[in-house]
Image (cartoon, rainbow, N blue to C red; front, side, top):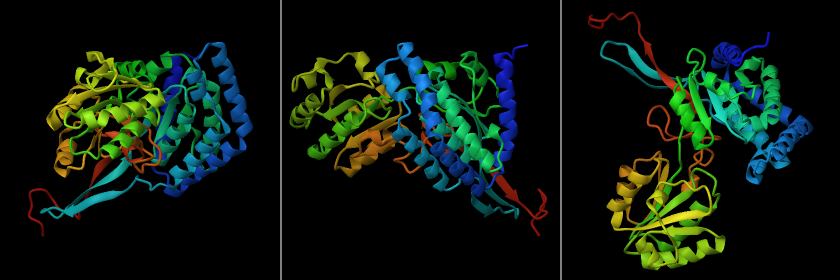
Length: 423
């Protein structure tokens, strides 16, 4: 009798729960050994990885995948190098598990503090890029979690080959293979099962398009770490160094159009708009960026008229909306109304305005004189990241090793009894 998708996912969940108890008590040295061994296994399996990836690429071409998707799917030698380096980097990071902080004596004589512990089982749902398999597996392993990885069907052969290397590393370190499991079926019912198994899965991390994340957020019975959009802003204030602001804005938009930290709306203070916008527009024109501007913007430079929808749009493309605003209050109001609470930045030399901006902008990352594309776990010193969260509970901003753990209270006594004076 053929196993149903639900029975299969339940079997994975049960195995992950059992493995989570083993990896949670593993030593830092044991986890690092697994990561280094997995890196060695990847290096030794380059031909197998390339062959598996070519199967996916051939299927993608046959199914009419867009060139951009095929590019994301490709496991080039440089990307395999990057995965190996990534595993070794995560191995070199401090282990958050077991760290105890704020131990202090209470009047009763007991000591109270907090210990950092793994979340348990992390389910990760992602699309296209097979290198996410390594990022997710390495971060979950180092933070003491078991993980169930459900990649996109277009990368199934690549993901299986990568997971096999990780499991070789786990075996060499004496850890169970179920610490990292890749969902073998491409049936979409597997996602529905994964996000509704709170008895086996502690947290879900969706990485992909808005449709996937909305579906997971709507249907999950397990807590979700996520962000929907990256509608990121830079506000060029009246006291900005305009040459510096121009460099910041250009980098924020053009570093990579398809990342969630790319600037999508540029806000310019009316006091400097006439001085700032012409040179900025010329630089964007050279790069082929389409500008969509408010009426005041179009009085200064050539731009397509911006609509109300533009302020709500994450383009992920060479398109930028521009609005001229009357001061800091209007800039903050625009960001808090139209933004996605992801990453926003101010260009200013005025410390007071910078402080107000950081205090009042309601986003996971708020920056001063910095391109928004710096919103990245590696750039923040987290090593890699499992994703970026715009939620306000548990984790916010780039989620690295610490974001894959939580804290529990540790209480130490010596026979004290409640209601009795300490001896």
